[in-house]
Amino acid sequence: MIRVENLVKKFRHRNVQNKTAWKTAVDGISLHIAKGEIFGLLGPNGAGKTTTIRMLTMLTQPTSGEIYYDGQPLSGHEAGMKRLIGVVPQNLNFDQDLTVGENLELHARLYHMERSERESRIAELLQYVELTDVTNDGVRQLSGGMKRRLLIARALIHRPRILFLDEPTVALDPQVRRRIWELIRRMAKDGVTVLLTTHYIEEAETLCDRVAIM
Ligand code: ADP
Image 1 (cartoon, rainbow, N blue to C red):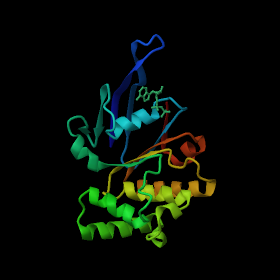
Image 2 (cartoon, rainbow, N blue to C red; image 1 turned 30 degrees about the vertical axis):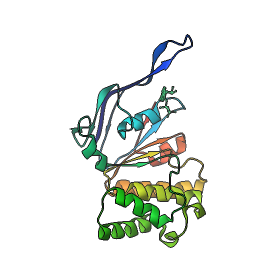
Image 3 (cartoon, helix red, strand yellow; image 1 turned 135 degrees about the horizontal axis):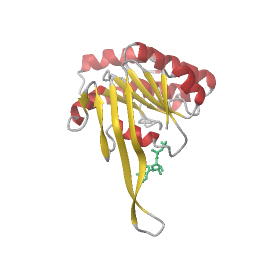
């Protein structure tokens, strides 16, 4: 489902002599991730995990190398490929003044979903992540675990086939973390391919089918 060949990212920066230099953030990684697999990227700060995810989610252009989704090269087909992927960012970037339901509604509109489809998909997702009871609550009122589940629901709205999660359980207590793991496992079982980054070795061991250490 995901194939990455020799992906490289170099950033231009000013070195200590104030001269232009190139810094290699990702140095030729290759990966192959099967459909429905839960794949973990593990590594210390500065290893290049975020840069890798940013290239995979089209937020930054690779310096060289190629990414394939479902056998198709990403370069040159970015617009079409955007519908294939969902992204759960690390920061909770909701509209804080809207309710849970309104946040999902806003996102569904961004994907130009018809009204009836929006309504049924939002109801289905709220049930999936067990947030139906708080549909009309403001986002500010949610606990950390609920906010994380809402982020996951939002990323799934357009039925992506690949889901990227950047540190999905950071700062959550163990019980809540386990609930998020269950949700991720359920998605993979439903055929979604999952790529996540994590700092937690326990998360990589118990949740992921395979792990790459950067
Ligand atoms: P991780 O997510 O594993 O902590 P990052 O991908 O954020 O790692 O960073 C990898 C390396 O690339 C680091 O050395 C970081 O300083 C560098 N880097 C990331 N983004 C930029 C940028 N926009 N400009 C210059 N260097 C960057």
